[in-house]
Image 1 (cartoon, rainbow, N blue to C red):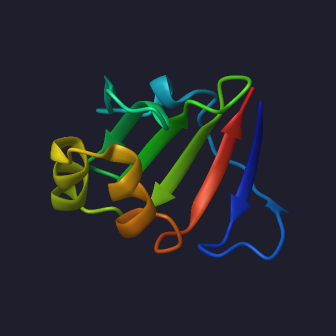
Image 2 (image 1 turned 60 degrees about the vertical axis):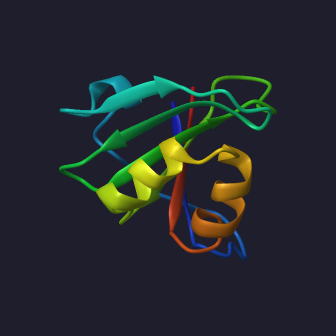
Length: 102
């Protein structure tokens, strides 16, 4: 597994390490499938304020972990009619993220 740390508006990639081999190793994580053309699954850790997103366009299982996402933002995201639209306006470019891929 390779983890990459990225800024909210990435200028380049810098390596980082996390202690988890999979998002399923994160304690107390909520994982759900969503109905979206852009996104397959989302997961959330309320203790760590981390949102994980698996995009439909990924050719392999690749998760993006967004740091500092509040519970309210996550709940609003899950309730949004357009998950891709919510992601594009409320999450993308506003939070630092790490790419998690096998």
